[in-house]
Length: 395
Image 1 (cartoon, rainbow, N blue to C red):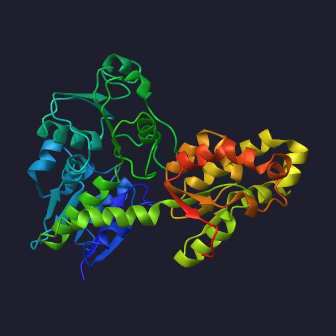
Image 2: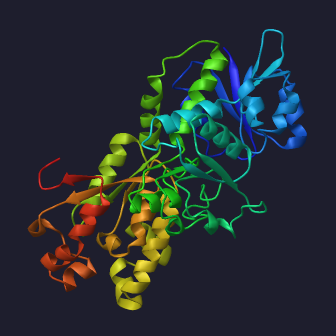
Image 3: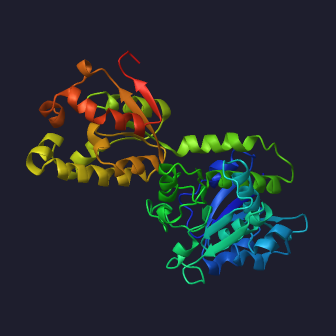
């Protein structure tokens, strides 16, 4: 059986093994390696080829006996394959991946001014693809370049913005290099980051109803092309969208919201049991951290203190992937919690008739009439959620 690997500096949260398992029957491993050990790994003969990620996409070219035209144009290699003579041939499947991402989105770059955030290997790939797709103007923003983040507002007429930096990537979620308010002509946002699924930049674009797409499609598509090179055969491109959906489904959290006593904890535990996912109850996490019950926290420290704890615990939990998460009924009273949940999750509203809600041990439910509480929150429950579950019947 053939043996391949991903080379990089930090790989613990890579999706690549999952992706490659969908396109071929071969071994695929993660190899975190320091630069001083890179040559030894390549020359070990243990692997038939590699994917290459940060920070070695340019360095790896020194070890290639032959380099594809796309790689030469871009100045970076992210896939190398050993041929029958033992020679390493370098390719850039990121080109295929980014082009696939754009061509299968609602974002048209032809004739438009495009702003690329970042000047590394990913930026070079983006620039070449944008050229090939007919972008009118391409501006690269870097920290120390002629166009930098201090002068970026001068590019306010930019129509397409692409983030090719790691800013906003796990574990440094929910940060962005720019404010979209500075770009009134923006008609499309692309972020090469795939973890989280929706970065702060993507969420900001969605809020403004600007077409936006994350880097997951690019990641899967480039993996598809790398798999073709590894196996030396053409694969069915119809497998790409299927794999994208499968990876997204496996990695997104399922987050339950709804009125206190609606059954979020019960249903969340059942969902976790049925899917083999880990279950996290935010209220339980808060009680454990504070060593006191929710009613005690409200009584002794007040609701504002509790809401701050809730947001902090939600921020910490929603960085993770593949969880079932039950939230408290009042999570929707803090606006920022919406983006925290949606960065890496599908939000599900658990509906239950008010006369069936359990109020015991729920301080807000006991102090405010349920109908009033529901009226205050129902728009948020509906607006924040992707789906709903009717929990009025036996499930």
